Amino acid sequence: MIYYNKEKELVKDYVVFDLETTGFDAKTCEIIEIGALKYKDDKLIDEFNMLINPGILIPDTITNITGINDDMVKNKPTIKEALPKFITFIEDLTLIAHNSSFDLSFIEENIKKLNLNMISNKNIDTVYLARKYIPETYNAKLETLKKHFKLNYGSHRSLEDCYTTNYVYQYCKNKALIKN
Image (cartoon, rainbow, N blue to C red; front, side, top):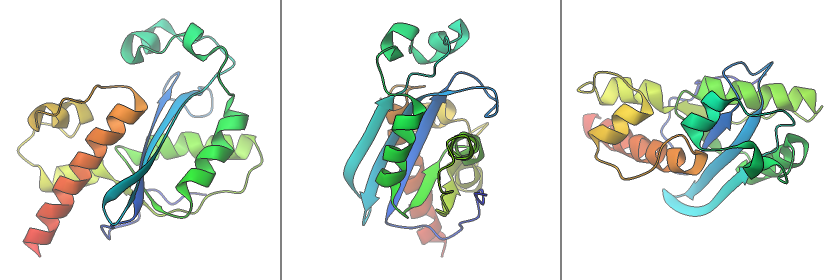
C-alpha cells in the first residue's frame, strides 16, 4: 500500500506527476493520460507524457474538461503497457502531485490489477503545502493557484498541470526555507 502524503521533508530530487482519468473512482474509472516531470537538484532533467487507451469510451464530460477524446487514444498504449514505463521513469524518487491521494489511488489500483510490484516512493501533496504557505487564495485548487500566480500553462492536461504543480511546490519550498 502507498502511504499517502507522508513526506514532510521538501526535497531537491523528485518527480511531479499528474493523471487525467475517465472519472473520480479508481476502482471503476480508467487513466487516459500520465504526465511527469523529473527534477534532480531542482533542475528539470526529463519528462514523461503518454496518452492511454482506456479500453472504454471517454465520457463527454471528461472530453469537455480535458480535450482528450476517443479518437486521440484509440491507437495509444493501454495501461498495461504504460504503467511499467511510468514506474521505471519515477525510479525511487519522491513523488509530488496536487491532491496526491487521488492520483496515487489510480496508480495503486492499476498496480494491483496488473499484479505489478507496489511502489513505495515517498510523496508530497501540494494541496497541503498551498494551504499552509499560500493562505491568501480562497481555495487550494490548481486552477485557482495558476490564476493567483498568473501562470500561462494550460489546465486539465497532465504535463501542463505538472508545470503548475512544480511552480506551486517551488514557491512553497522557498517560503518554508524563509520561515526556518
